[in-house]
Length: 574
Image 1 (cartoon, rainbow, N blue to C red):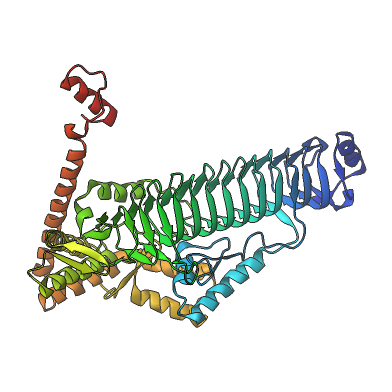
Image 2: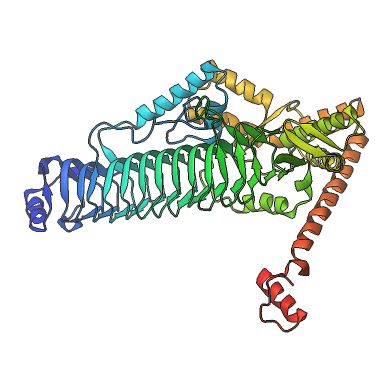
């Protein structure tokens, strides 16, 4: 740790000779090895403390502690005007623009803690306890002195006001940062304007992006003029060009296109097609409605949903949907617009290679190092398994209600008989795959029976979540670190909890406690089901790679062989 000293008269004279000034040189402290050549054209005000190797060039600095080896160059104004929490404690009106699900942000906020604060509003004691945690974190950050970590590079910026900057951060060409915290190794770039914000480690905000009242999680990317307000973004989200208002963006929320609006909703492992849009009010009670697009949902180009609405996991949404659908028990589906109605193809996405590719790429693209946001990547898991079982029951009940019908209506969506039958078949295969996969792993001693939750990327048993929420309400868990530690303990035994769930489901299906042979049979059947679903996905991939999809290739080709060669070369096919 650096020790500091006052400047000597000779150093002050040398600094003034090189164009540096100070309101009061006695308020400036420097490391023992300080040399006047480190400052040139520096305009210092208030209390400034410079660690070893700090360089300031042609910049105004007021009330800041600057870490070792940091460069501040051509910065018009870097100032802390008075006591500040540097964005910590900012209230974010997530999911509901009127503030019904407000979450208070701070450094160290995780996707799971934010999920609890936003989702469990029916437990006011819990919400109050989580808010106390956030307030304490904000109070701990509060200071009248700004700080910049070591090894930072801050150049060609205009106004940096009341901003705390972590180690290894880079700020280049920033227009305005006000009342915020920049996480370790983050990069804030050209023409960015950000107000009342917190970023986690390795975040990137660049190229004219505009941020107001937002938390930006680990390894998130904001680029090409993205605009966001009152929103939370968690690990590995990537947003460009478009706009977000009052959204809970769980891990891997992706929106790349212009004219795409994400508003008043919950997303995770999500992809927004060009022109994606939602509306969250019906010109009656104002902007009070919300939508939930569960893990892995995709919006095709031009897709629109009028809130309130909810879809099951891994649903592809195409067209316009205005009838407030609830398809949460139908995972891996297509939701289409047909003749102005919402039509559902249950389980259709189980045979799509795109789903397989998405699930594989998320794990491959995980760049986290801190890893406070806890994420499960397992395709077959109890949360999805419960949805598959509920979907099967719903489809069978629909059919039994009218076996002669050619179409059915469920929660404002239309399901044709052919789609219903195919959905039953696919869900039976997927549920078998789930049971087989989970029974093959894990051990005994943990109880994961019953309902499960996808808490912004983390799968956990509802009973475990309820136990944790009770502990928070009773002040048995009082810090974000302790809360995350409890969640990590569950995550470490995920396989054990998941196996318990699978054993319970298998017992229910058999009508008795399964013996070892029955468990092994379920594992074998599960592998066969997985192989069949994989075969269907590979067939889907084969079609996408077939010559039928070579339309527009080989523009000047004289023969089909040349056109095929161009197609294969461009697509990287053998």
